[in-house]
Image (cartoon, rainbow, N blue to C red; front, side, top):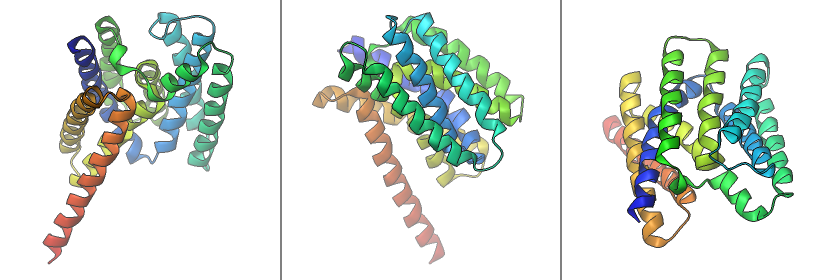
Length: 246
């Protein structure tokens, strides 16, 4: 059991550290659907690689995922009006394309589940080390720039390398949910990062433990745990504001 729990926990902590950093910037720009569209395009690239016989954690699969993610990340910033509407349409189109591609693959249903919910417990430590180095490099580049185009491209890099491991829903959750929670409790970027990272790490640990205790899919369990935790935090924040107003 530990051989599955430890990689999942390490992956979740790594995703929290990198994705919250990017997610806060995306929320500042109101780019939630853009993040989802980029992640889904990366999943489409992953699906194509899987269909052609490549392993989920292979370099070829990561390259294909990255190529499709970068296409979305390069095109979306050029849309000046109704960008979120265009992003929602792009997401729906890429999701449908992913389903069509995987309909030709053996074990179709299993592949579809992996694309959307991931298999975070199956990640290797070597893969985590490799993508961790890329995450750090992307964060350094992003920290030194305020370019919107660069933000989308770095989002593409991070989401593309995560999606084959964690799936679309979990990657999007790591990008957005801890960032939303952080914004509920602080206006300082430093404090927001601290809240987001803490939430991401704790929710990952709770979700992984619940999934193994109850024998549930790990990725889907973490996503649901994120949602419930955010709901509780929003309730606590609302009650705190009411007390302060009295």
